[in-house]
Length: 117
Image (cartoon, rainbow, N blue to C red; front, top):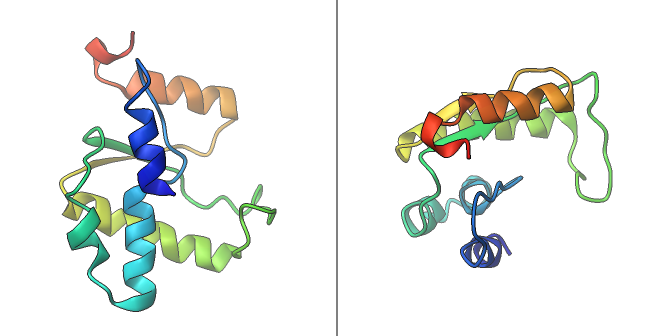
């Protein structure tokens, strides 16, 4: 599904942001199976070199249909991705624990100047 999402994004003009993506899926698969998924998929399709990560936020964390794992698993995944993305050559920008509108502003301001259009 992550690969299909990435390919579909290529058909759109302008910016496309992913809430989870191919690297997240490959890192999770590799952690669970020891299959070298990051070797296969980590370099196969590149994203923009700047990646935003949201740390688990216990005060607002909730389980729902899409988020079936608990807070401990979310923290473990976050720590794994903090290692994986830089190892693949990405710059990680940590999203602050602020309101959604303020976080959106933070993302726009964190983009390189020529990309804020």
